[in-house]
Image (cartoon, rainbow, N blue to C red; front, side):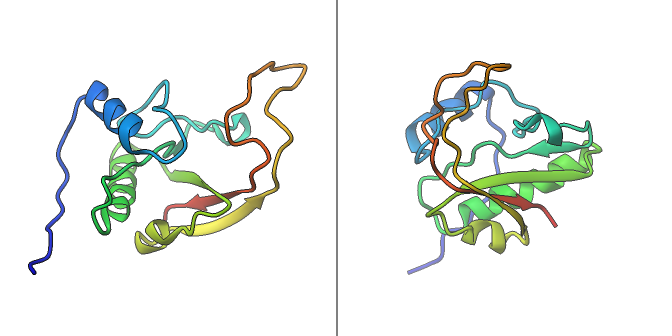
Length: 137
């Protein structure tokens, strides 16, 4: 059996969102984006030099997500960003991130919810789940 050769192709925002909607395990497509990465969701991480991978999705092809994480970091650097981060949820191995050379830099305990008096919000579907913060090399 011959190995499948992966390669990147440009896609329009609508196509990318349709793909995420079909293939991502637990999140819908992001509302906004900057060249396939977005501003950090957490306000304290949004320093103008940091961007966040808010979704990746693949059809299960081996090493596809590692390819996406590596390409995201190269693109972010080419656009002048100095830091690229992402989060995984408890139960996700982080193998794709480690394969792309990323580093686990923090763990976040489960939250009771995302609603606060100063920022009313509905649940995100990932309440009460521990999260892990990763950073590109």
